[in-house]
Amino acid sequence: MGIKRMLKAKVIESAMRKNRREHPFDVEYADNYQLPADAERTHSNSHYYFLTDFKSDETLFFRSAVRGGDKTDELWFMYSDGRGNILLAEKDHIEKGERNPVSVECVEAGKLLKFRYDGNVVPGVKTDDGYVPQKGAAPQKLTMEGVFTGTSPVFEFSTHMSPKLMSRAISREKFDRSFQETMSAIHQVHLEQSGRATAVINTGGREIRLENFPAARDHSYGKREWSYFDRYIWTIALLENGDFVHTSMMRYPAVSYLQAGFYISGGKVISLLKATEMDELPTLGTVPAAIEITGVYEDGKQRITRAKNDFKVPYLFDEDFKVVEGVSDFEIDGVKGRGITEFAFNADKSRWGR
Image (cartoon, rainbow, N blue to C red):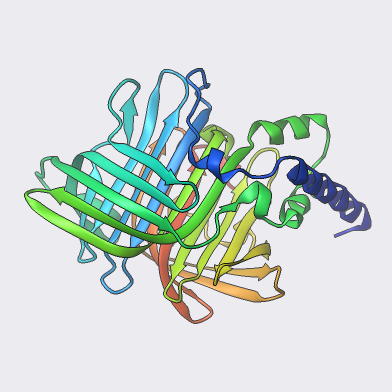
């Protein structure tokens, strides 16, 4: 990094620290946030939950993103029994005014949340190419009720992540008023937390109990316009020793090398400082079979994240942005775990690389 860029990064970092002091994170407000009735289509309120069992590979994830405007809201639901059988939500969008089958209720901010699903799913199987519906399978009703208990600190990215990551990324770009306005326009509140969850599923005349599974949640709200992304990579891992790890990489027209991440162990939050660049990972338009990410953290340690994909499910947003959700097995410095490798791509392939 040259002297000019280094000074630029220092100025940006100082401004970010000042903004954090003036606008502290309020978990009570965040966990009870509701999208305003007059919100525009580009704004969303998204909840995501991931539950898994290390021994059986039984896995559940779901997402509900309520959007402004008069079009659709986004919906995911996936349950895998760990033996190759999958139940997937019949559709991944719902019309405005239609009952949303997913709901999340905050009981105690940052500590206890309830979640529910009440809708149709389609039985399918896991293949090398991802989820494939069973031939001739009809949709079936499924209900789920669960409780998430947070055991790690809540990590909100704009407040708790090292400002060095953002300042380094921004210092690479032409920094002017239009750039500032763009970055402000795409800002979201984005929090993550690990914990334990119990869920009870009823479908097809049988009850499935997920008892005290390792779990993670992701909640974000603010402006999210899919077509503005060039592409991104989002990974989270729950490890068998109780640690929780996040690494993500994003590319927008305004900023090309944005990274984020943390390592939470024993209640201690360690922010990422630098990771493998996005362009060093496979760019296939889907989730790669395996990836390896090297991260340097605030505690001075270098940690290597290895992930091997188990299966994947594709989702399409507004016909110009594809998200492929990968459930993967992880290993970080010899500790095994399980988590998500999410790879997302703009329909315009010319925007994938620089």
